[in-house]
Length: 298
Image 1: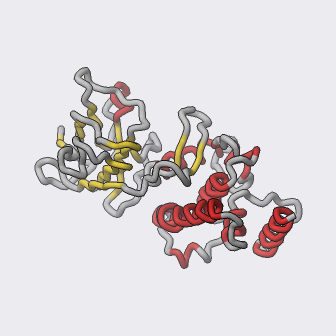
Image 2: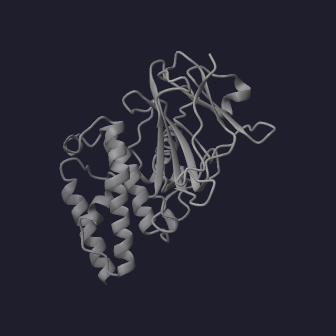
């Protein structure tokens, strides 16, 4: 009975909050449930309370700042934009994942895929070419997963599973190393080409990522829609086991594109993130492993 009363309260809150823009017969996107649940009664058990608290922290500390930066909005601005604004769309997708993380046993949310996430938010994802909505959402998720370690994508290239981890490995301990100059002390710029060689991969117990930003910490549009490289990628390794990453504006060639991180035409910033870095040597924590320098090749 308590569940039924709670569900009715959530439905009523959704209708009240959407009274100015909801139309008869319109589907309510799954992501809208997050705000209603977040503003509702406290969870009944300690376990549920801890899960809600972690989900809220992820939204406030990780996801929301990322989306605000991506859309060049302040928190106050975000509260005033129209329901059709791209920020609202992206926020609904993220909030859908938080809802799914809280109730993973619910049928439609179990082993949630990108296509199902898109369908559960039907009507809010608008693509220039009809039928490409799933790919558009997948591109967003890959970009966000490079920044938020708790966002996980499966192995399927076309329609991977997607989830937010609220428990298990805590990827809070993250070490970041920013690079704005090359090994010669010159500013990194798309007018030149660079390589980053890992003779030994970043020592982590979770994963590592290398993300490309322009000079103002915004993502860089590029033909591959690739904004990061990470240990989740399928790279081409050298015969000795080392890994060369190619940092440049134009393609290094089809045979090297698996290792290519596209750069903008102007100056840029590289951010290497180590999620759950190892404490035993080799370790960036103890200084027994250091990020390699970015070397100019042309």
